[in-house]
Image (cartoon, rainbow, N blue to C red; front, side, top):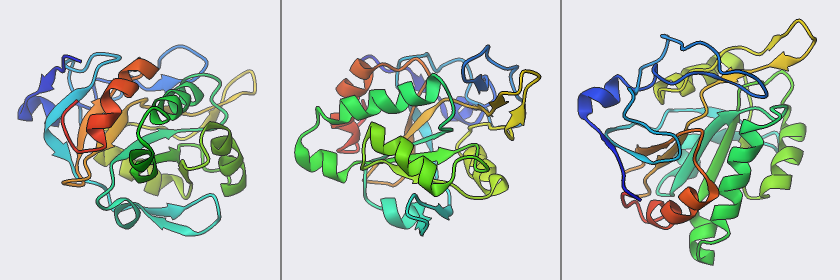
Length: 218
């Protein structure tokens, strides 16, 4: 896969150029509230960041109801992080399904070592129980995290991902607006060094995960 690189300056500018995703609907307007990654990132292609993201200090509740420390639990492990919600009708389940399918193509040892973390953007509805049931249908090894919204939003911002509080639309549907990027963290540095956009396919992840598992550039 030919990989566009983002310069150190562009990496700092990167996250606000991404639109928030309204799952099941039209993309929302761009939000200026996040650090931005400019147009260097193309849907369906990995962007290797010249200035990686630090892994946020984040302690939330996992699907068993226990505290889960992101830094401690993923230290030295290849890790994919995605912010979304279980009531999303399209983007979120497709993203997790694509990763789940691609993960199965890895050697068993790499599958066991990979951490896939799904952080809800709709914590009022995504309880540990409901989040666990939803992720079990994708891959039982996936980690689901929920907690208070401000904590989740702050962690997402540190990764250049914008999320808005869930709100009820005129038709009664509850929509959670969120950036649809997946961030890959290296097992060598524990830094988020690769970004995937909403259009990333199963084939894209299947090609890249063997290198992500080793902390190499895809």
